[in-house]
Length: 76
Image (tube, rainbow, N blue to C red; front, side, top):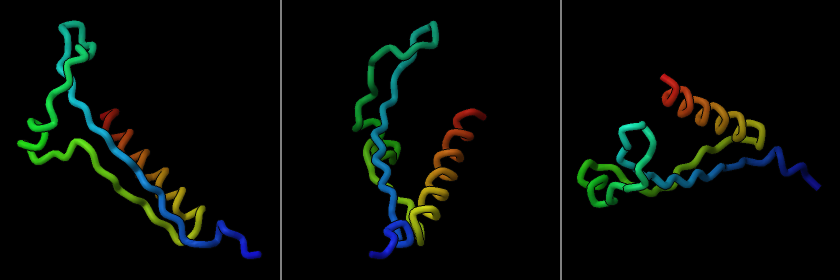
């Protein structure tokens, strides 16, 4: 049997966006901005995206890099 890690792989990322108003303390108020408002700005509040690789290792390396890039944007 062939090693399945040597086959192409795809990671599916499901994104669900919520924008909250903040309290004076900086904490989320729990009030979520309606999806229609996000759509008015051209933002889809829920979507799927993928990361593909030639092997499992390649796919996971690319996924890790993409997630690290997203985290680094948040930390800036």
